[in-house]
Length: 169
Image (cartoon, rainbow, N blue to C red; front, side):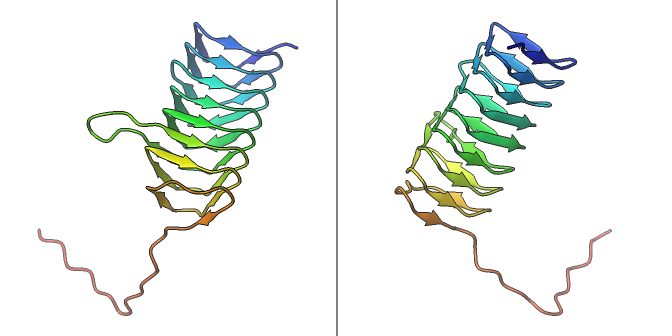
C-alpha cells in the first residue's frame, strides 16, 4: 500500500491515498488524492481539489478547486478549474474548462461516462449529461443532454492558389 513520490514533487498539506504514484515535478497543495491514482509528471493540483480513486491526472494537467471522481482520466495538457467531474470520464488532450468570464468564476459539471475529445473548450457555467460525447476541437457554450454527441467544429473551407500578403520591411 505504499505511495510512490517522484523526484522534485512538492506535496503541501495534502492527503495521498494508498498505492498512488506522484511522478516527478508534480505539485499538490491543500488537496486530496485517492488510492491507486497516477499524478504527473509535471501535474499541478491546486487547493481545494479532490481526486477520486483510480484516477489519472497526467503530464501538464492543472486542476483547481475541482472534484474529479474515480476512474476518470485527464492524461495530458489540460486545465480543469471549478469543475465537478463524474466517474469514468475521459478528458482529451488540451481540454480547457473556461471558468472565468472577466468578473466571476463559474462551474462546469460533467456527469459520469462522458468522453470529451481533444482540444475542446468547455465555457462555464455548463452541465454535460451522463454518457455524452464531445467531438475533438469543439467549443461548448450550452448544456448537453445525456447520451448526446456534440460536434461544433466549423466546416472546412479551401481556397486554391491562395497568396499571403508580403511582410512589410
